Amino acid sequence: KNIVPWAVPAVWLSWALLSWLIRGQSVEKRARRYLENRPKNLELMHKEKVNDSLVWLRFALPDGYTTGLTAGQHIRVHAPNASQGHTTWNGRANLEHVPSTLSRSYTPVSAPDATTLDLLVKVYPARPDLGFPDGGRGSTYLADSLEVGAQIPISGPHGYKVYNGEGIFLLGQSRKKAHRVCALAGGSGITPALSILREMRAELKAASKAQRENFVQEMFIVHMTQQAEEALPKSWYEPTDEVDSALACRVKDISTSTLPATAKPEARTAGRRALLQSAISDTFPAPADDLVVLVCGPQAFVSELSQPILKELGYQHILTMW
Image (cartoon, rainbow, N blue to C red; front, side):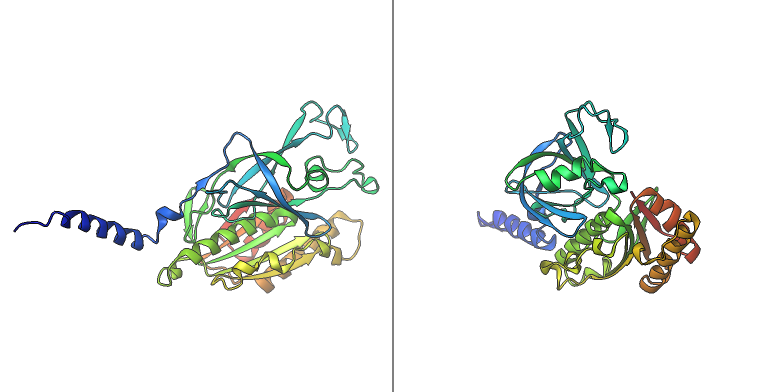
């Protein structure tokens, strides 16, 4: 019954190696989150115009760090205040005329384990003809003034997690398991939908074949914009590193510019409602217990337009994101 001196350490080593393999190397994949509630400077490494209203900004993170942000959370960019000292801005009283900097919130479109922080920023240029002579404060600075190589303070994460992984969404105080996810996005509300798509694909890629049936397998997106040119290129839904993803994504873009021109508010609302309802019927699967619908966008789009339509069509598991 003599024990070889090196036998016990060898057993410990073997057990540790086996545990590491079973866990899928989870310890090694748990990279550190760089952002904190206090602002930290990040360097802009890439800027690209996506279309007439959106610009893509990519910020570098230090080696060994990731964004660490999950779906439902956002960051705040702290930018110089172009309206400082101006009592009015865009023809209205300027409530931000005192501070030298201001913060604007954005939902990253990069996955939680990404080593860069990617933002899609909707740009509000100066448009005197539309009663917007001064333009947006934060978006104009980010799109026109912030140069590649420059740094800007960013803080986060802010907000609450709405996705707990493996298809589990937080709906109010309850948790809902989904195998299919739909997203109804208005304008720049497409960014939370992209964030969730990135996260679900990242976790599916890391899962073994035997585990994949526990994850979301399909996503369906309807994106409503004012102009057709504001729709995202399909490459944003199928980037080169996700082309072979097991999570399929079907996208339908619709634009209110296709509706007949009318000055009556009730007619415009009815036209938008009919357009959106038709797109939902054409794109989304029928309501089911394992299906969750995300609604992302301006409050009027979410509460006054989308939610009534979804409830009328029988969808029950609805998650709203402003």
